[in-house]
Every structure is written in C-alpha cells, then in structure tokens.
Amino acid sequence: MNGEFGGIQWTQSMCQDGPIAPRKALLVGFALWGGLSWAQSLAPTPLRPDWQRIGGYAVDRSLSSLAGGPVDRVWFTDEGTVAVRTRSGRYFVTAEFEQWKPVDQLTEPDLDPRPLRFSPGDASRVYALVGDVYRSDDGGLHWTNMTRHRRRSLLGAPVRDLAVSPEDPDHIVAVNDCGVWRSVDGGFSWAGVNSMLPNLAARRLLSLPEGMRGVRVLLDLVGVVEWAPGERDAWRPTEDPPEYAAERSAHRAARASLGAPISVVALGDQHLYAGASDGRIWVSLDHGATWRLVREEQSAIAVLFTVASTSRIAAAALERSDGGPRVLLTLDGGLSWEDLTGQLPAGRVNGLSVDRDGGAVYVATDRGVFLTFTGVWGGLAGSDWIPLSTNLPSARALDVRLDEADNQVYILLEGYGVFAAPAPHRFRQVRVVSVADYRERPAAPGALLSVLGARLLRARAGLLTAPVLHASELESHIQIPFSISGTAAVLDLEGATQRITLQVPLEPVAPAIFVDPSGTPLLLDSATGALLDAANPARSGTRVQILAAGLGRVIPDWEAGVAAPVDAPPRVAARIRAYVDRQPVEVVRAVLAPGYMGFYLVEVQLPLLAVYGPAELYLEADGRESNRVRIYLEP
Image 1: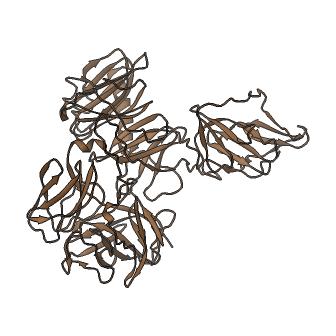
Image 2: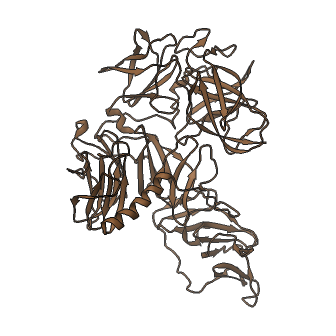
Image 3: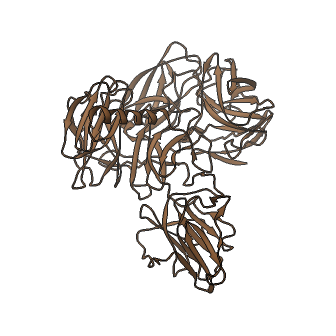
C-alpha cells in the first residue's frame, strides 16, 4: 500500500507488531511541511516558495451539493464548452465539468433582458428566471417551478443566469450567488459543479491553524468559514474567532470615541491602532480609553497591522487616489514612521504582515505577494521588493499572515483560497524549531530539529555528532544524539561559508505530534496503514498509530541518524500516556517508528465510544504534554 502525507512518500509493509510505513531511504529529506524544496535564492533573485494549497474551492451551505462563490453569467460557446463569468470578473470554461480553465477574456453573448431562456433545438421548451427556475413544455402556457422545495431554493439563492445546451433541451446550467449548478434532466434534479472552480469568495484571513482549530477566512455572503484539520471536502461555516470579534468591537468603539471615519483597526498586546479614510492614524495605550494622533496623510488608510505580541511594531498601507501603493512602518508605537514603498509595483495593497523583529515586511497586493527587508536586518527598506507568488495562480493577493512563531507564511488569493509555505525571510535569520510542528520547543534526546536559514554540512550537539539528515538553502534538519545530557544543548553548526553556535534548552522529553500546515496530524489506521482524517475517520474500538517526535531515550540505546529496525524497534523509556477528549486511552506500544529516523510510533487502543465526530487528541511523556490535534471518530 502506498501513501503520501505532506510530501512524505512511503510504502507500507507488515511488521510483526502491525503495519507501519518503513522506508530504507533517508526519510528526513522528506519536506514534511508541504514540501520544503526551494530554489536557491537571494535578493534580487526571486524567492520561489513551494506553496501548498490549504482547503478547496467549495463551501458547505447545507444545499443538495457543495456551493461556490457568486457567478453572474453562463453560456454555451460555439466550441461546445460552457463558459462563466464570476462576480469578480474572471472567466472560466469547461468541457466536461470536471476541470475549469481560466481564460483572460471572452466575448459574452448579448444578455436577453427578458427573464426567458429558449431551447435552440425545441421551440416548445422555455425556461423562466424569476428567482427560481420555471420550465414550460408548451411554449409558455403552463409552468412548473424546478428549483423550489419546501419553500426553499434547491440552489440556495435566486438564479442570475441560465444557459440551455444547443444539443439537448434537458441540459441546462444555472448560476447564482452560490455558484454553478447543472441539470441534465430539464431541472428535475440539480448538481453543483463548484468543487473544481477556483471561485472561493474569501476576503480575509482571520486565523491560522492552532490545535483543534483550522484556517478560518471571511467569505462574502456567508461569513466566517473554516477548513478544519483533516478536512477533505469543503469549507464549513463556523463561529467568529475571538480575535476577529475583538477587532470588530474595537472598530465600533474607536468610531464612537474618535468621531472619525475609522476604516481599519489593529489590536496588539498594548497598542491599539486606528486608521481613518481621511488619512489619520491614532494609537491608544489603554485599550481605547484615550487616543493619540500620530500620523496624518492625504490618502485613506486601507490596511493596518500590528505584531500582536510586540505591538510597538505596526505597518499601514494607504489607498492613494492615483492607484499607487504606499506602505509605512513604525517600530516605536507610532512615534516615527518609515516609508517602505520604494519600488513596490503599482497596485492596491490588500494585506500586511511583519515579523516580530520588524525586519521582514510582507504585502499582499493586486499584483501578488511581495517581501522586503528593513534596516533592522541591514536592508534598505523597500529598495528591493521580492516577488513570492511567481509560481502561484495569477490572481490578486487579498491577505498575508505569518504564524505566531514567524516560521510559516499564509496567503489568500482571490478565488483560489489559502496557500502556505515556510516563511522565506528565514534565510536571513537562523532559528531552531521542532520538525514536527515548526514550533520552538526544547530539544530532547533523539529529537528532530529544523535549523531555519542555514544549509548545514556538519553539526554537533556539545561534543557529540548531530547527523544532518536534510539540507537546503533555507533549512536543514538535524537529529539530536540519544546520549546527550544536561539542561542545554550547545549546537555547533557548520555550513559552507559560516559557522554558527546556538544554545537551545534540553529536556528529557519534548513531545510533539507531526502536523502539516493545515493542522492535520499524521495518524494511521493500525489495521490498514491508511491515513485518518475527516474522510477516513478512526473507528470505535480500533487501534490508531500516532507519529510523534521528541519522546526521548529508548531501550535499548540507539544511534541518531540510523533508521529504526522493522523488527523489534527500540521502545520509548519515558512513560507515555494518550488522551482523547481528555480521557485516557490505552497505549499499546511506544517505539521508534520502524524504518524512520527520529520518528516515534505511539499506538493506542480506542475504546468503544459513545460520542462521535471530531475529538481532541494529545500525548503525554513523563507528564509533559504534546500539541493537541484533531482526530475524527466514528462507530
């Protein structure tokens, strides 16, 4: 059985203790986080992150099929294809309704001002668009509503346009605010054809994956939707994330307090920023009780961003009347502002993000996503804006966000949704994180660490060799020796042209479950080796295998950089517990994952469960908890 997870390819084999996915080749060249294969790049050469798309195009709106974004026009072309124009003005064509091809421009047929659509091949067949779709088989004498069921439209919204196939009067395609809908029996049944049409009407990135929570975006006409960890089918409506609710509340309060046309606000740990459509920017240090005017511009403030944990750092984007961009940065809470615009290509700035040091600034614009470095990191602010979306679909970038640790960047593209990649500014600053979830964690004996920003040739942890398992221009993976001891690991890292010494905390264990950028954990069905997710949930009473890192020493001793044996792999010395919805479950075994380097396998026995659906899963090693992930359960 073959499989893939976030860039890992494996071949399943049957071990004495059950199936696992061993691999003889070096697995830690794996690029677990969506693939970390990067083209070597330094400014001014463009960076080419290996972007991974998170989520699909379809939305669950409780209709008969998955919905899409708003579509205004549809017609059958002379070539026999179906063409649509989305609300955003983009054109797509399809021949078989499985794939949609973007087209720069199409000639639209004249729109009949009457709400009638006639069949080219059957004069008696007429369709009428009066919110719902009506059908007549006698030239309009009698009508039947084909989209209304129990006082509700089967298509979710009033129909804006409908096309009839010139070859078959029963083949019709309708469009509305819920996407594209097709019927091949004259309207008696309908199927949405939105899953492959890149028309996700998202406007903002609201929150990034964290534990049980997935990516959340703000969707036109729907509200907040989420792509949950392990999801495979659709974005689903959910509640507002707390930070978004707080922002809306602060926006209302700022408007009332300042009596000004406040357009945007940004909330941090201490500073609260407000920008107005008349170009003024205010800062509050007491959560909006009092305000101080810190900037007056001639253009509307379109975007404000502040680093939540270091809110003295903030950035603003202006909406100039000439359409050109302007980006400002403050590192002192608004006392002084630096103009970063430089050579930023023309086009509206729709989103901003700044790293915690104020050294890297990302912008999402109508021309794509760009990165520049400020004087904090020795750069010339705005002198070089590095394009990051050259290998992405051609679309406006609507938003950009760095994760909490500044290790990964997420972007939102018009129609195409969310993409993620390791943050490319990391090649300017070395940082050590856990390979499992890219969080800063203590090292532990046997742990896999990612050294961001360095291509390593050799590495040592104290006096011991730390094998380099993977190396690229932006990242290297090393394994901490199992025999290391103490309270800190002094890492001596050697590259081709530099040598770096770093010190990281050392603990006996630092458990973490492997997850991908969407927060989906690496969980396997013990009986089949299949990945577990929303489409393939874990069954009550079965065994689940969890791939983890940082579980510490093993018995018997093992050498770092050597794949664990398939037969009788070393067992974990620490006491391992597992919890599902905070209830303990039986740990059948905890060993080095057969065939892997630095991976641990924890196999648990699920009890007969009375509650089904998504649940919280985490591990505990000698009392230290791992990250919390989502597991789906079924009877």
